[in-house]
Image 1 (cartoon, rainbow, N blue to C red):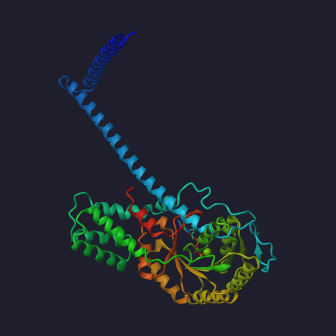
Image 2: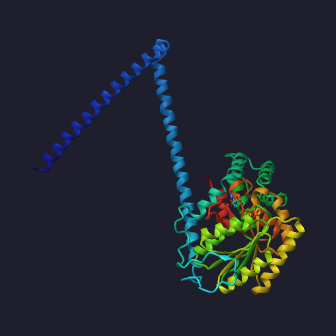
Length: 444
Ligand SMILES: Nc1nc2c(ncn2[C@@H]2O[C@H](COP(=O)(O)OP(=O)(O)OP(=O)(O)O)[C@@H](O)[C@H]2O)c(=O)[nH]1
Ligand SMILES: [Mg+2]
C-alpha cells in the first residue's frame, strides 16, 4: 500500500467521523428542542402563558447553567486556597523537622536508671523503652495544629480586617482607626495596639501603605517585630536534672500543661519526673498522677494538706537519685489568701535551690488566654514573688483573643515559651512567632 492510498483512507475516515459527529450534534439539538418543548408544556400546565413558556424554559436553563458555572468557579478557588495552605503547611513541617533534627543531638536514653527510690511516696515506674521519634503518630503537622487552635482569633481578627481592607479601599487615617478597634477587640491591649497603630501611621505618612494589601503586610511585619524580641529557650541539657517550676492561678491549665510537657519530653527520650506540689486539693495530685500514667513518667506525691515544700524536697531528691533529666513541679493555684500563695511559691523555690544547684532553672507562669487583660495583672503579681522566666499561654483555641500573646510579649518583657491550643497531649506547642503570625494572617 503506497502513501497515497493511506492518505485516501485517512481522508475517508476523517470525513466519515465528521459526518457522524454532525449527525450526533443535530440529533442532540433535536433532542434538546424536544426537551425544551416538553418543559414548556409542563410550564404551561403550571399556569405560565403559552406565549412565554418556551422563553421561560430557556431562561430557567440559563439560570441553572449559570449556577453550575459559579459552583465550578467557587470549587476551583477553594482548591487553589487549599493548595496554598498545604504548601505553607509543608513549609512549616520542613522547618519543624529541621528544628527537631537539631535538637536530636540530645543524649538518647536506653533505659531508666534502676536506682533505689528515696521518696517513699513515689508511685509508678519509669519506662525502659528507647526514645520514639518526635511527631510519630501525629496526623496533623505542628502548623496545622497551631492554625486550627487559632481559628477563632483568625476568624474574628482577619474577618474584620477583610471588611476594612476590602479591594479598592482608599487607605487613610480612617482605615488605621478601624484597625485600632479590631486590635483592641482581639485583646492586643491598649499599649500594644497603640504601638502598632503608631507604626502604621508612620508607614502611611512615608507613603508605604497605599494599597489594602500593603496595610495587611505592614501589620503582619509590625506584629512579628514585637514578637521577634524573644530570647532563645533554655537549653534543657545544661543542667541535670533540668528543674521546671510551673506556677499560675487556679484553673489556668498548669497540671494539664505539665502532663503535655511530660509526654513531649518523654517522647524525646528524656527521663522525666513530676512533683505534685499542689497539696491544697487531693484531686490535684490525682490529676497529675493520671497524666503521669498517660505519659509513662513517675510522679512524686504526698497526702492532701501536706507541705508542698516537702513534696518539692522529695521530688528533687528522687530526681537526683534516679538521674532524671527533667523535673517538673506542679503548684497550687489557690490558697486561702494571695499572700499565702506567694509565700508558698517562694518556699518551694528555696527548697529546690538548696537541693539542686541553680534550681529551678525555669519558672514558667501559666496564663489563660480567655481571661484577657486580667492575665497581665496575674503575671505582674507572680513576677514580684518569684522571678518568671517564661510564659505558657493556654486555651488559645477557646478564644478570639489571640492578641494576648502579642500583648504579653510587648508588655511583660517575658518570653512566651509555649502556647496551648487544645486539650490533647500534642496541643502544647513551642511558641514560634513566625508560625503564629502566619496562622493569623493566612488567607483561609
Ligand atoms: N481548650 C483548652 N483547654 C485547656 C488548655 N489547657 C488546659 N485546659 C483545660 O483547662 C482546665 C483546667 O486545667 P488544669 O490543668 O486543671 O488547671 P490548673 O491550673 O492545674 O488548675 P488548678 O489545679 O485548679 O490550679 C482543664 O479542663 C483543662 O483540660 C488548652 O490549651 N486549651
Ligand atoms: Mg492543677
